Length: 192
Ligand SMILES: Cc1cc2nc3c(=O)[nH]c(=O)nc-3n(C[C@H](O)[C@H](O)[C@H](O)COP(=O)(O)O)c2cc1C
Image (cartoon, rainbow, N blue to C red; front, side):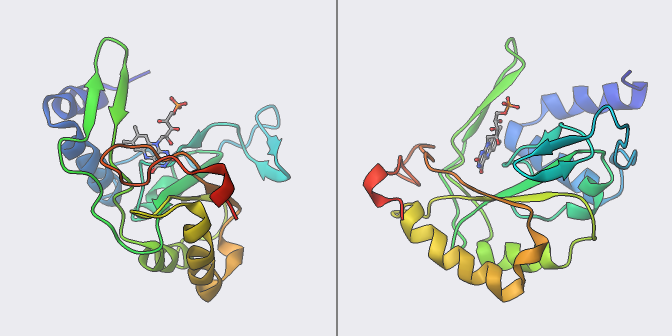
């Protein structure tokens, strides 16, 4: 059940520009204002997915913590896994704003961020410093003007530099058609 404080917080966030609200939600987490339930360990929820043992099947999708800046607070939220990114080989600003839109009636959102992120090197360094435990996924996005075939080798080098073992799953985003020509759909023949 939602507490009165959470309900008030949601009303306040919904009055803000959606991208600003997204940023504030991350800030709130970093300030220790997020849930602290820890992993749900019921045997009924334990799930194996692609060889990974998850405490429960509910994970955080890519796009919320694009830059891996809230790994410690997210680890306390009770997710079965957390996927960060999308990370591209180099930092990139993404598409011009506005680029995140609420569909209030549908309780949904549309985004065309265009893989704005701090770049693989910074993200990999944060991943290396994350608290131990839990399953972390890393979403790899197509670089501006490039596709996954270009992205993967550069990103893998950066990951190798900080140690592979920190990441439980790697998810290349093959179709990053988020508008403005940033990370457009990737031609099948270019997947290396
Ligand atoms: C603001 C926002 C940013 C997102 N960024 C990414 C991203 O960088 N990479 C990616 O693969 N998916 C991204 N997604 C898609 C989500 O990971 C997820 O697939 C999508 O929100 C659908 O989730 P649902 O099936 O739980 O509704 C983003 C979604 C949102 C709303």
